[in-house]
Length: 159
Image (cartoon, rainbow, N blue to C red; front, side, top):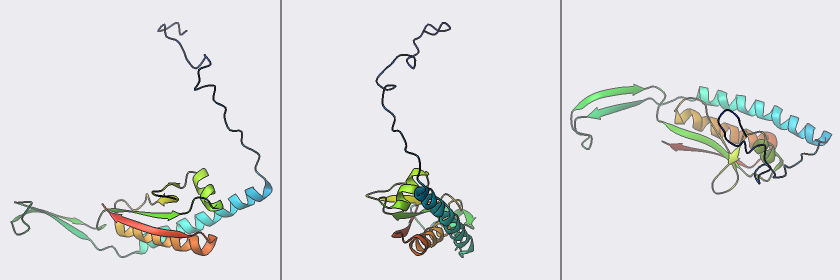
């Protein structure tokens, strides 16, 4: 019991949540360590190349206009905004999760589960620019296939 506010501290009592067995991890073998090092080194290279592809892509700027009547494109324009980074969107790479690289990417927090199956690595760079994220995703997927023989596909979606 906590003397300051007269409440029970349930972490001190063996409740079902605290009594769950934790999964003991086995020490990593030399082969696993070598494979993890290979994946980490390859990922650094792949990420850098993807980032360069995103930076090098020619982005088509966008102009957003507010009309007097938002449902009539022929009505008078009230305001316009120039968006240098182009359209807003997302980019990601999807691949199978039951591969050594997939297991490594999930364990390191690089990837997360994707719908309907597999894993995905999302691009969290380049602000909202879909074209830059799309270039990143396609380059990363290409290099995952080339460098690590991972069946990967780059995807994008406009927001």
